[in-house]
Amino acid sequence: MYSPKKLKLLENSWAGVFRVHILPLLPAKQIFELYSLYHGRPTKELYTVIGAVVLQQFFDLTDPKTVKELSNGILLLNALIMMIR
Image 1 (cartoon, rainbow, N blue to C red):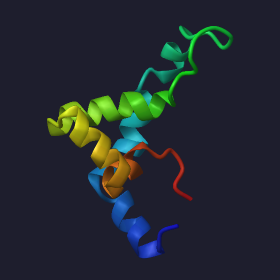
Image 2 (image 1 turned 180 degrees about the vertical axis):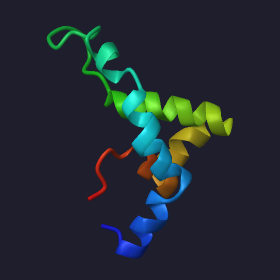
Image 3 (image 1 turned 90 degrees about the vertical axis):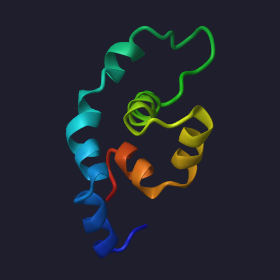
Image 4 (image 1 turned 45 degrees about the horizontal axis):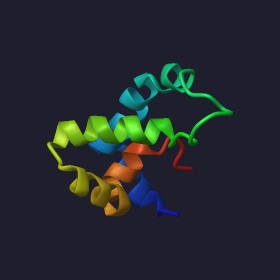
């Protein structure tokens, strides 16, 4: 998907630090336990949603800007991807 050079740049940016050090600390597993597998609407991918809210607050983004950045922004996407290889 990315060249080795681009992967190295991403891994050494704030996005790599977020993905490695902060994303695993988010309470997605604890929140997931509150949802029913059988009733109601399916949940969104919790790491993505919680991570997006953290990044939205960190960068002071509006809701539409957050959605746009998640759709188009390589740094925000990389920050939320657990495994890039």
